[in-house]
Length: 106
Image 1 (cartoon, helix red, strand yellow):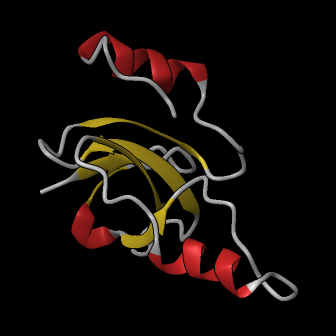
Image 2: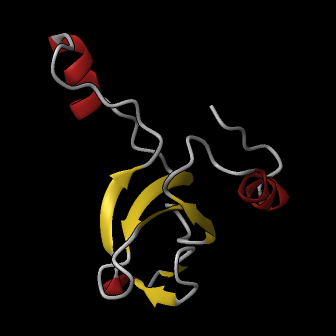
């Protein structure tokens, strides 16, 4: 079972207390976008095996959204951070690189 620390309220919560929100840091296409852009956003994303950035909501706690970095193969959690940032913070990237030196954010 996954356990995340909510960066908003500081509580360690298991995944049963959380609601998943999909992939983080995506460029979303809405009204006015082309059909190809919307199709790419909705259907043509890579299914990453390894480090993944996700959106989560602390549904049974403070109710706020946050982001998490975890490995999809091992379920290892590298850290969580507020949802209001546009890219993973340096400390999260450093935690990932400490365990996976060949990993890069691309």
